[in-house]
Length: 246
Length: 350
Figure 1 (tube, rainbow over the protein chains, first blue to last red):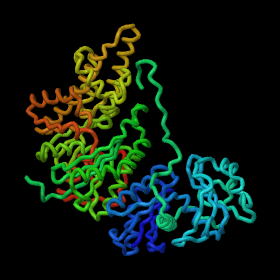
Figure 2 (cartoon, helix red, strand yellow):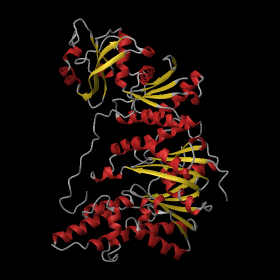
Figure 3 (cartoon, each protein chain N blue to C red):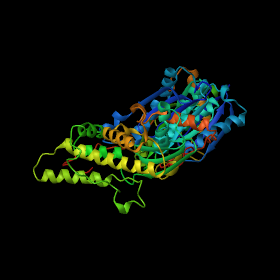
Figure 4 (cartoon, chains in turn orange, cyan):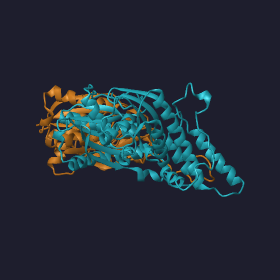
């Protein structure tokens, strides 16, 4: 009885994961500007790859960002509507949480180590959040992490300056703990956010699915509200000074 | 003709600031649900695409659920999903097409990406019945002013002309703004126009000069008219005189209605068409309705205008066009269809 997971916070990642956290099928696309074209075909391909009928799905999981708006919404509206059509729950997980959990596995982090996750927010900024490792492996085979700062959006240099312990040497607070930097946002600004060797760069829908299952089983609410972190770019127009064309 | 054996089509519209979902079987509308973010845009004096897109995301699932509830059907009854693929605003269009694709996957039913502007004409089939073999369609709204020759609403539409600059409704909103009326200004201009003298001021009729007959016989231009109104108001203000707002509105509205109806009737005659459909939000305009009724009667043309609730953007127009293309046996769209903000008006489905 599988769950389908979708992340469109950067590229497009789709995975089919069993209720116990096993990966049944996964596909991704490097597409950054055409999420709406690539996502739906990837979903049908993943279902086909696993030989799973849509009616067998038990939940849909979506990465909630933070992320550039249009691509993020493609994943969220797809997840919500697909869940409605099949008659199953939709579960949201912040995409940055997924990268933090990936980092714990990929880099062999231990409890009290810290992860600074940065993704590309465009406009010379990054979306970021900082996590502390709680357990290397928890339920559904997924690491347990706790958010200690963020998610927020800002310039990479400002993030590095405000989170000194996260980017240089040992983690703050706990002697001997590691601090690592991961994510595509760090790869874009390596002079201020030194990316760890072998650090994961993009969210993996498989990890998001496992996080969602673990959190659901722990009784946590998993809203699918988008993490925009920025207001729409709008200015209220000044009233016309004289009867003239606007 | 009964529609009980016809496929049930769910239509989704999200090309601008209205999230619309409707269910249509044959030419019967079961229910049309609309959620609008118009009020959120009012203080900006225009539609902000990002504000509209955020509202579409939040409104989509609740609007689908409401349409199903009110129609008394469930998603398992739906035979096909139709959605606006363009023209319109990219961000808003993306929400509707993504939702429609997800429904198509989740229900295992075909997807049809359709043209918003042609939907504005097709929606008249829900109230006026199936179109005759050949009709003329004038689609006028805040975003569109187009003249379409419709030989088959599902498969054969020819664009005879469109506005070269502002849409008719857009010109009304801009004139409303320069007269200091609240946004959107169109309905206020229309209301004031009914109290004024339409012959008080002779405003220009765009693209009606003999030299325009060859290339622009069926194209429209309202930008020069809007500028003429601004110049007239400015000159009057500079001279220290009051602005007769009702007369300005009436004379302006008269010029718009005159150009739209004159060119449309000429096109009907030229193409030997005896049925005219006027759709789109601007078809609610009083002077356009009156002048079209009068001139169609004189020319022996049957005039069809959908009820006002179907003239603004809604899901019914998309479900209606979806129903027409399904019944015509048109091939479904792929799950990889893009949105097209400037979709050609001869493209009915993608």
